[in-house]
Image (cartoon, rainbow, N blue to C red; front, side, top):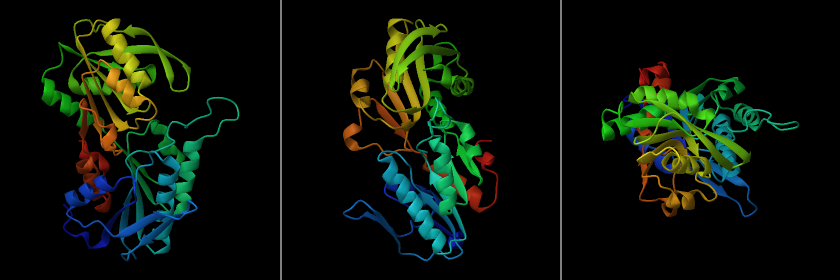
Length: 319
């Protein structure tokens, strides 16, 4: 709790209202008053009702669907804060949209993650606070500090409390080769062995499971990823673990619940027993399933805000 919060203010736009309220409660601070609305032609309007002159300001806003609207809300709010003479502006982006467009996959591709970094910097952000960037090297796209928090400890601790010792009967599984480093760190934290699902992607958002590297027969499996978008990869992997690998049950966890397209229908039909997600993206009530468990990140973000405000290293949170 921040006891000397006279110079700190916390704002939010429309994408992360619930999370922002919980972060404010953790800090023992009121959520500053503002209004974000849309004109009839689609333009976004931001109004700030509290003075921010000289203050240390934090704005909470994930850039999930509708991605462009949420991004513009954040940019316009940062601009409003800058023009209102805020002392320092930290954009808290629990989910950083466009993170998957971090390189040129083919000729004449844009690098949209770099463009977003430029937009945030030009708008007036002094620091970015986010969680589990899809590509950690995106931090290098910015000329301002970027703190990339870890969601894995929350997810790993949940399974440790649920299953206890996982060294013998549980295998942590990477759903593809790109998630191996993330899954290995998760497996080490849980003291569990690691397996890998080898897949080939025919086209965007469509994947085909080819092989399972590692022994999962008769074991409980935990699939680990940073985000679940259309759920094709994770659901195909779960099916393969049971039908090809002989696993007894499959759980999965991810930081960001994008859940677009046919994701919910795929989860309904999936043999997955449990899906553990973080609340970096607010899940609409109509998308909630009985197999979903959502863990809150408010405590981690509140501690990070306190570290930034007190000029302390963020690494203290995870030490």
